Structures are given as C-alpha cells and as structure tokens.
Amino acid sequence: MATKSKLKFAKEYLTPDGYSNTSDHPACPVGVKMELLTEMVPKTAWGSNVRDHVKGSEWDKIKEWCYKRSNYNCEVCGQHGKLQGRRHRVEAHEIWHYDDVKLVQTLVGLIALCPSCHKSKHYGRAINVGDDKFVRQHLKKINKHWTWKNVFDHCKNAISLYQERSLKNYILNMDYLKSEFGLDVEIHRQHVEITDEHIESIKAMDKYKSF
Image (cartoon, rainbow, N blue to C red; front, side, top):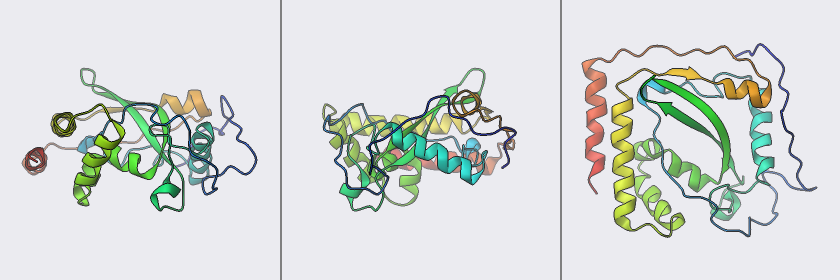
C-alpha cells in the first residue's frame, strides 16, 4: 500500500551502541511495568492494520522506532523473547480504541512486546492455534495480583466484547500515523455483510467461555 507522504518521525529515539532486536543486552530491571490485558479485534475489522496501509520499508522503520523506545525490552513485563527461546527480543503491537457509539476504530499507539505478552494480547488467534491455555497462564504470571477467577472472567469478557463488536462495521481512523510519522495514508476497508453464517461463527465462540 503506497502512502501519500514521506515518513518523518515526530520524535526520534536513540539506543546505546550494540542494542538491537537480536542483541544480548540485559532485560529491563524494573520488572512488571503495566497490567497485561488480552484483546480481540472484531471479525469485521480483520485485515486492516498498519502493515496493510504502509510500505514494507516504512513498517520496518516504524517497528524499529517502537523497539528503540523500549530499548528492545517488553513494555509490559520488562523481559524479552531471547529469554523465551526466540531469536528476536520484541514485536510491535498496535493499540486500538473502539468508539462503540460512533462505530470508529482508532489507532492510538504502538507498543513493544515480548513474544509471550504479544501472543497473550491476541487471545482469538491463540484460541485458533490451541494456545489459549498458555495465554491464561501467562496472564496469571504477569498480573501477579490476579486470582484465577480474574483470569477466567477477563478472558470470557474479552470474548463477549469480541462477539458484540463483530456484529458491527467500524470506520477506520489512522490519523496517528500522520501525527507521529508524517504518513498520510489512504484508508481502505471493505464493508462486511452480517450474514447468518457470519453470526453463527461469532456465536460459536461461546464454547471458549467455559474452562
């Protein structure tokens, strides 16, 4: 997807010499920095993300900017993927806000996450590949103050919210790319017809609310 403008960072980030997404520099000593919450993108919004709206070279630079900001450590748990047996330290995750009244999905930021925390963000994908148990265990591990009931309730609520939002079509707002990176992108998103088959596929997620 071609953009209408040239990438220009509103704020550059520098990292110490030798720091990269595959280097062996230390993890963040602070430990857990924020609560880990799982998210599920509505089915009607699948396939419309940042990578789908910018050039590959631009996405590579945006990801690297995100990684540098966190010194290549997870912004949730402070750890990194090499401690989890992965070759890379972090991955870029898109942060979305949903206006469920005006039906607008707005990109509000990017965050660097270790592979385990990133997997836990995408609970729907984890369900599809059989990793939902891993996600629940990781949520409990990172959110040390949560009980198992908190974990199960959070996951059930995430599915319910996904089901509710998947019956609506949202307008996509990516103004964040303009303000942060100077990129004026052409929004493209196809309207999804809410057919009986679509509704049944959403209802089928009910079976994942029981543990």
